[in-house]
Structure formats: structure tokens, C-alpha cells
Image (spheres, rainbow, N blue to C red):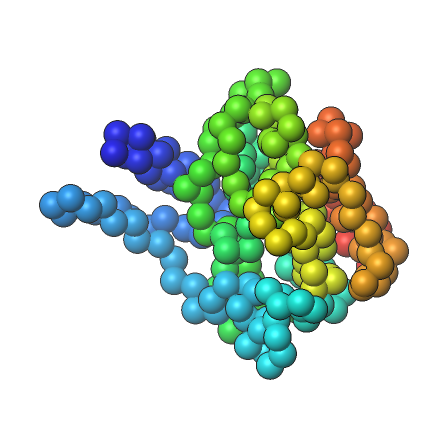
Length: 233
């Protein structure tokens, strides 16, 4: 219970400190007997992947095969996600558990025009530059390999998660798949992926590759990723 309160206090502290167009706003907090309530912006468009399923009428990104985004849809979505991550990292905030469940659509506008916001800081942490984090956490499909192999990581783990999200958006598949969580983690530890089943353009592939650098120090920052050719088209 004490740890839960500590985590909640950290989440509130982080959310009060951020102000960015692609991050959900914490409006207020209040408490009654035994409960603490967080009042946030209202996102009427639902989660990003849910919206895609609704608009396509097809199986959706959680199916196999999924429904890939067009280049323009992917560029609009990923540009906003990378901007949010860049801003957080500039404040020395690491998300640590970045998944599609943490990204919401503010309106029901078309996917290529909708405003996205990062909406969950429950496992986020302020970090000191040069000091690695050690708490093992995250969803298996989206974890960076160093979190599993070494148990030590820095903010570049968020960029790996961005790569998983973009791969999923652009191909309809997850890059590291398995029948169980353990099997998924083994695939992540290998860090091997391919574009055999779906074919986004070469510039889009290059963005994904920039995020999937196996050595954390070689992985692109969010700002460097956004300087790639794909985002300038």
C-alpha cells in the first residue's frame, strides 16, 4: 500500500510538471475516504488502435493479420508520439512502459488528422542523466532488450517502445511475437525483426530501424528520429 501511494504521488508530481500539446492535462485532484481522484482532459476519440478498428471495419491491429496504417496516418500519429517523448526526455522523465494503451485520441477526427496525447504516467520516473534505472517493468512486446538482459537501462528504452508501436501501425503485426510472454521476451532479447509480411516505404523502415538499435547508446533520440527523411515528406 505504501509503495502504491508513493507511485501515485510520483505520477501526480510528473503530470503537474508537464505542459505539452501531446500530453494529457491533469486538471485537478481531490480525495474522499480511501480514494484519490485525478481529473484529466476528456478524450472522446478513445484509444488509437480502437479507433483504427472502428474506422476500418476490419479485424484491427490486435488481430493477425492486422490493418496497417497508410504512410500519412502513420506519419501523423508517430510524429506526435515522438514529440511527446522528446519533451518528456528534455525534462528528464522516462515513460518506461510506453504502449498503445497509453495513447488516446482527443477527437473522432480521421486518423491522419487526429490529435494524440500520452495519457498515463503511472510507471514513469524522473531520471538523472548518466544514471541507469534498474526496476524491471513493462509489457513484454514493448520492452527494450536491455531491460531484460542487463536489468539496467536509460531513457532510450522509450525509443525502442516507439519503434514497436510504429512497426505495429505500419505493418499490422508486432515485431516480436510468441505464444507466451516468456516466448515474446526471448524474441525481444534476440532483437531480430523483419519486414517480410508487410512493406512500408524505405524511409518508414529506416525510422523503425533507428529505434531498434540493439545497443542503447546507438539508438536515435526522439529529436534525431524526427529529422529523418520520412517526417519531411
